[in-house]
Image (cartoon, rainbow, N blue to C red; front, side, top):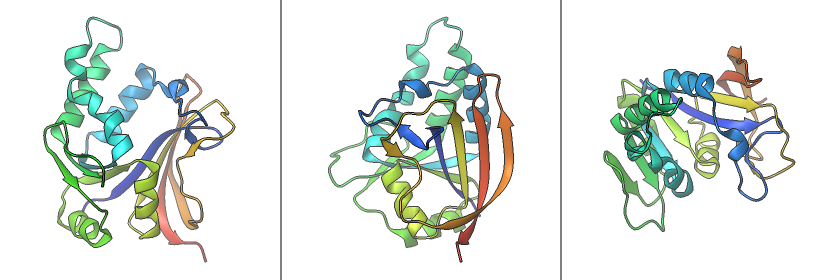
Amino acid sequence: MGKLISAGIVSLDGYIADEHGDFSWATPDDDLHALVNELERPVGTHLYGRRMYEVMRYWETADAAVGAVPTADVVRDYAAIWQAADKIVYSSTLQEVFSRRTRLHRRFDPEEIRALKEASDRDLSIGGPGLAAEAFRAGLVDEVRMFVHPVVVGGGTALLPRGVRSSLELIDERRLASGVVVLRYTVLGDLA
């Protein structure tokens, strides 16, 4: 059975983008990118909301876009990892998808995700805070991964949903030379 993982690069105050939608502060260096690659390699299916898919579809052609730049190896590696995984995009407005191994679903169905997790021999990831909030509320998220950058942005789009109370257990923590702290938690369930 696969785990459903919610992950995000966040500011210290918990935002994936500031109030203006800017997330340029979250650009990973080679060390963080290599760690993300390691953690994403076991993922067989990515679940995305429309906005997150529009950001992530860059990886469909990223390997061709990089030249002989220092980060080329980690970028090519992530592109290969992303391209090899299945993707499901949840959107009522998107007309079509623009990447291979990608299906478009009009609505998020918790029972469908439960069945997908049970049938999968690989992990699943969920990207996009709106979609992840639905998964949290349905009790589907098994693990939370946060790549905490040493910045405070003061507001914007939060990684974790408002109004959801859950008990977590820290299963891994790492500090990178850049000051980024990587936190991994198992979701234990609703907070009593």
